[in-house]
Length: 213
Image (cartoon, rainbow, N blue to C red; front, side, top):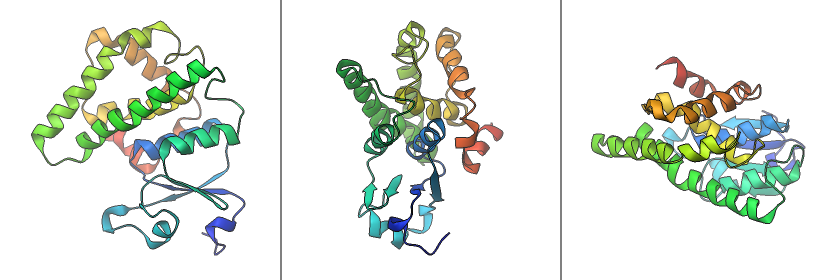
């Protein structure tokens, strides 16, 4: 890594968790939009690195640095990147469609990703079982939405699909076993994971998620 201070570099820097869906969706978005991004994988098992705390007082991941701008809310990061690099657009310009997408993005981030985190990291067997059941049920409840249009609530691939794709990749690792009635969800997963940009977004830890199941 260059000795040049991060805030003075011409290329944006992403402090990323190699296992987190929140970090993964930023990496995937960068690949979808061909955004030059320097990725620094952060291992927080031994504490938060001082250089990250100097930029982000919460020490959370992902953290994006674009010269003097530091962002550490995942949804703010992805919306900023979509506006900063507008082609191809991943959020609709229509106010109603955009509001619905933002609401879904918030739900994915605060609910679905949190359930995935519990399944992957909790030592409480009952808590893990409940989270796995909850996430499975939420996906099953969404079957009509997956059936209705080519992508999630949209005719075109969008930021919601970016956010869901990283979750779909993790389903086998999380032990989510969908019933035959959930074929629309499985078909959707195959479609978004088959995009040519997806493999390049994966960290080594994320690649291992599919190798160990």
